[in-house]
Length: 222
Ligand SMILES: C[S@@+](CC[C@H](N)C(=O)[O-])C[C@H]1O[C@@H](n2cnc3c(N)ncnc32)[C@H](O)[C@@H]1O
Image (cartoon, rainbow, N blue to C red; front, side, top):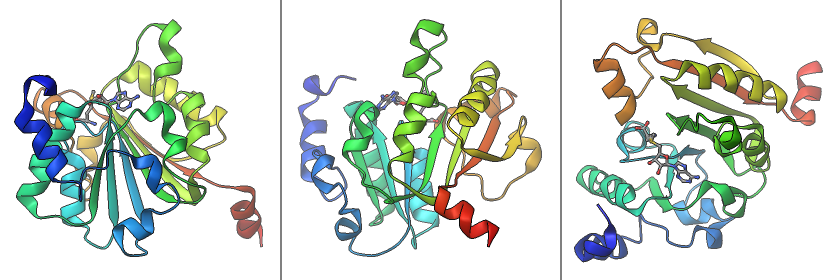
């Protein structure tokens, strides 16, 4: 679906600028003011049609959530899902993650979700992977001390690669599973892709990592 051929979809996006942020750069450093509270901020990169982020926002009204995707057509699907649930702790950003440091300021984000990102299998495209060290270094610019990054994928080579990239970025991997279904984790919220893969019996990999700044390491040693 191309939005230029769907004027109604574009109109719906424009009519819901309480949820859709067209110029998120203008909110950099001011996301607390945007949400009107001091609650922790959870961000999903490549949010797709919004199943994960909308369910999280519904489940955890005491946290704020942001879903980012460069494709207007999937942001539109996520918006429709959010409108069905009457949610006020969510923002959806049509934005290219390549420039993510332009929308969040230092210490602004408590948790980052990277769910089933595009694998870019050719090594000449490795830098485009959202778990490439180049991106991980960008995320560190706005993550709080002890913030978490949670990455899920069905793609085992990508997962193995991500472990090396997280280590290269000095992110502290605290948990790894190669078969998420076997964990029966009640806190796991499945994404659209995850649900499809699970139905086909494909194993899902998940890692959790913590960003420890020098300050938080010194605190731990005290
Ligand atoms: C494979 S889909 C996964 C969607 C969802 N996270 C899920 O698990 O069901 C990846 C999504 O990431 C988005 N995406 C990929 N690279 C991006 C980038 N650089 N900036 C913004 N969105 C991106 C794509 O548009 C797509 O919707």
